[in-house]
Image (cartoon, rainbow, N blue to C red):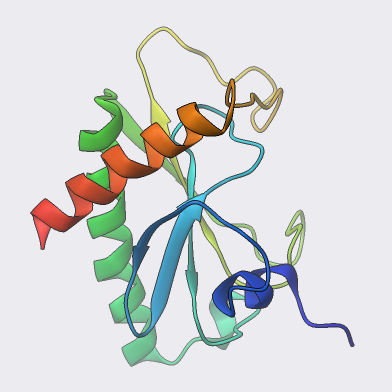
Length: 140
């Protein structure tokens, strides 16, 4: 089986706009965000679904999800956060990931996960990356 795209991001074989990284997890901006600032948090260990986590590693995931979600909220100045995780059904990449999506009052999801948006250019994407990364660093 060919190595998954997220494992390639972890190994720096594919470019990603990384907002957070430690020994066990990495978070980066989604390439097709629902709203700008939409971030994915993944374990560095290849784990396919929630059911494959050890209890201890799952506890670490919860702590890191909270940290990154706080960073997305502060970095984007949004009103709230939507967390989504698909397991098997609708899981586009077979590597566990949490979608951390900034939400603003009055901006509906329309069709739940679509339509997606795009950053205007790499500069705008980098601006979002820096704001979220800075907010996460401050929260440490």
